[in-house]
Image 1 (spheres, rainbow, N blue to C red):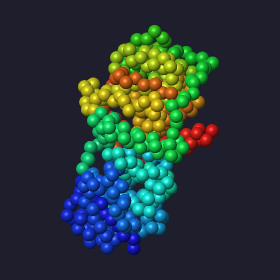
Image 2 (image 1 turned 45 degrees about the horizontal axis):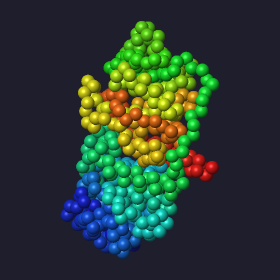
Image 3 (image 1 turned 180 degrees about the vertical axis):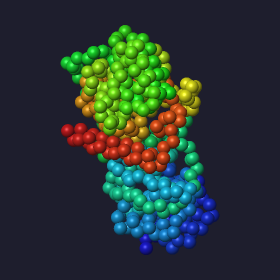
Image 4 (image 1 turned 90 degrees about the vertical axis):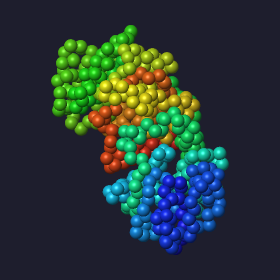
Length: 469
């Protein structure tokens, strides 16, 4: 049997876990990682690989208290040997319930990919990755494992065992809606810059990096009834839809606009409220699709391909508000300024009563003209509100989903065109119990994460084609 060096990375270094590892015949050495052997730093991972004499490294990652299951290490080894995978991880149990993870894809390049708490790395595969793609930089402070994983994934398999092989008591028990903004926390700015540099280097190796050269936005011979449309997809939001619609209708502009609300077969008072508003203001276009199978993306398509749609289409979610009556004018001015295909603003997180709550302003300051569209493949979103030049948007439309549809459109547009940004807050995003992503069940969260990884996978393939001419 191949031999293992087990490395406990800070977090859980309990005597129970150490005893469990020591009792396993495959584990020939246990390292309680300190600063010298911390595999998250460039110097630590280099020293660890250099001094490891075994075939595999078993990393116990921070984030929870781990209890290894029966014959779990043997199972990890067996799968690694049979598949010759370079990086192996597995499902686990969380508070006695199964906690499945998701499979790794070529687009799983985000630094937040969840591998659980146990990862087995083939030393052979790690050395091959370093030989082919360069050493992990000594200057890396936090992302050495991320860098190694991306390099390793080019020539070796990153493989999930869909079996719960250990139990973990998690340390981070926040709901999904609370965790999703961690990557824009200004206190993590240095960390994020390092992760962006690592991801960008990977895209260059993979042939998917795009230089900051952009196509000119084409002029259009299509005719439009108004200059801009505010698009609001909605289903069963009778507590918030009036606020959203009135926020859009109250905009002050020197151009004509309308508000297109796609009422996706609401069963509460949403339809009644919208009908009442439309009777009073003919700028509100109340559309009810004939189809019963539309997600949010499908509702957007109903709006942008309709004869009501303006030259520009601006987003407003059914439980959100524009920050003031000048928001739409600011967005359209920015779209006109440099002939962008898309503009993305900044928003403030508020509660149902519009009181600011942490993390407050989400401005995506990580975005740069030089590298924003490459870094977009690492992070989980590009911000809000989003607005589009409709003639270009109509070339692709949105996927008919209710999660990630905006991310898909943004990645696609950014492949060819420059995206403009507004870094001041122009939008209030309500966080309340009605949000669709407030507290996702694990299977739903997994499905969403897997879908965004799929979008990255196809986008990376498309960008390779661009670079191949």
